[in-house]
Image 1 (cartoon, rainbow, N blue to C red):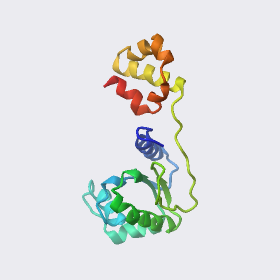
Image 2 (cartoon, rainbow, N blue to C red):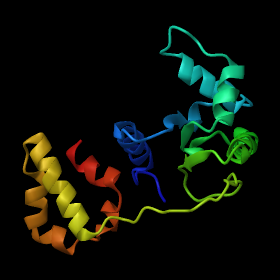
Image 3 (tube, helix red, strand yellow):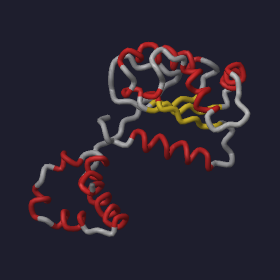
Length: 178
């Protein structure tokens, strides 16, 4: 996957959709890996994120207990955005987390070296946008912004001939409206 494919957006929507489920027995945690400090323990960072909005703080020991009880779905976003000096360390931390009671982990990243091994992992990739996808996004953006940029582009004779690889990601299509 490339930059602008929507990995972070997908991750956030995934967490929100999980939270809407009444039957869900686990709690999703969205963790932005790029914010983990150099050589910071992953548990310490997760603890900071959990405790930030809470009046009554939980301890590291309580977090470890909850992790061992397998009550979380970890959505670890942006492994590719981690500082190079921190990747090996965090990869080992994620491996450790994965091996504990087979925790559920969704890890988003671009393809690269030193990816963590996740227990019973499956790998999925985003597809580039098709011509129809690009048209649909342009039409939606026109409606959202009360504009007709997309409509005019789609009709324009040069747009039809244009190499659509310029607009293969949602980010690139959205940039037309900036």
